[in-house]
Length: 155
Image (tube, rainbow, N blue to C red; front, top):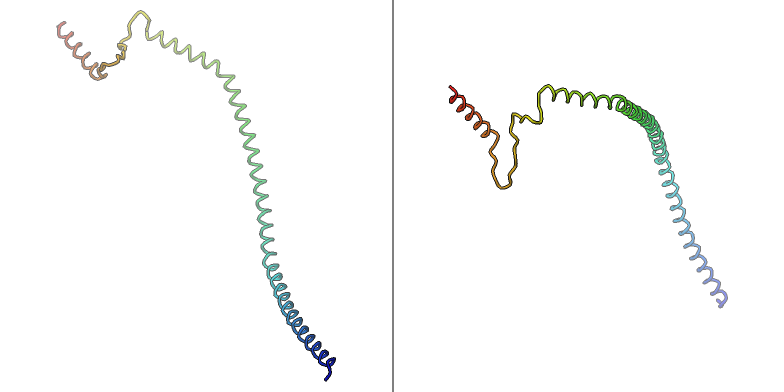
């Protein structure tokens, strides 16, 4: 066996080992591609119904939004009508009602006979800082007692 034959055998063995490694790598790559293809198919099977459901939900939401928009525009119109009505009523009846109320107050005051020169039936209360003012009940008791004493004096 010459040196050339030994070199040829070594090159053939090297090529055989190299081809074996490449065959194993290609076999694993094929398995990975098959698994990837299966995974993509499964995802597609699950994603399509989900996308259909999402599309239906978006359509339903759009319908509801359209309804709410119509309701909101109706409410806005009613609000503007109520505001206009309120303004009209206030401007039409506001002035005359104030005048009627003031007239009624004047008539009532005139009929009760209150005048500035005659003192009112109820004494005015004054607040004095640092002194205790008797309560209304005590004041009424004292007035009744004074009235009784005045009547007894007259009899």
